[in-house]
Length: 186
Image (cartoon, rainbow, N blue to C red; front, side, top):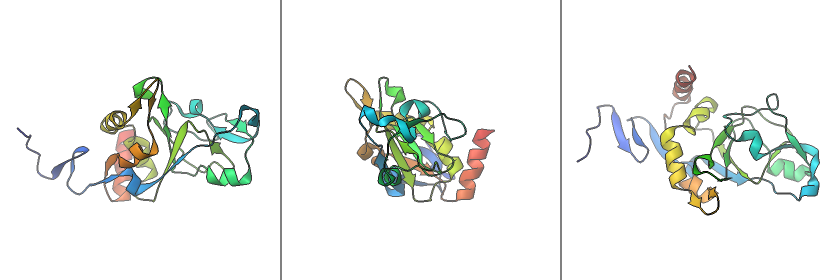
C-alpha cells in the first residue's frame, strides 16, 4: 500500500519533495577528487594542509577558524588539490559507520592549501548554492543513503563511484536554495 502524496509534492528516490524540485546524482552535478598522499617526511613544513581532523564533524572550515598543518607540496600539486569556496569535503573512511561521508563546506578559497587523501573533494558546476550545500549533505535522508552505499571492512568507507551515484533533491532556483538554507540556519 503506497502513501498518498499531498498535492504539490512528488515521491522520488530521495523521498517526498516539492514537484518543482529536481533529483540528480551528484556525479551529474559536479566532479570528485581524492586528496593528496605524501610520505611522512613531507609533513610539518611547506604549505597549509587540510587533514581529516580539521574537518571531522565540523560543518565548515576556513583559514580563520582552523590551524592547518603543513605539507611539502609542489605548485602543480597545489593546483591539482586546491580548495575553492563552495567545495565540499567528504570523509572517506571511519571506524564508525556514522562518521563516513561526513561533509565539510569550504566557504571561501583557501589559497595554496591542499587536502588529505583521507578526504574526497566535491566541486559542483554551479547548480547548488553555497548556503544550500551547508545543509543538504547533513540532512538525515542523504546521510542514510550515503551510509547505505558505503562498504564495511575494518572501517566503513565511501568512494567516488558510490558518491557519484548518490541522488540529491534540490530546488533548481539558487535564490530558493538560499532561502531554504536561511530558514534552516534560523
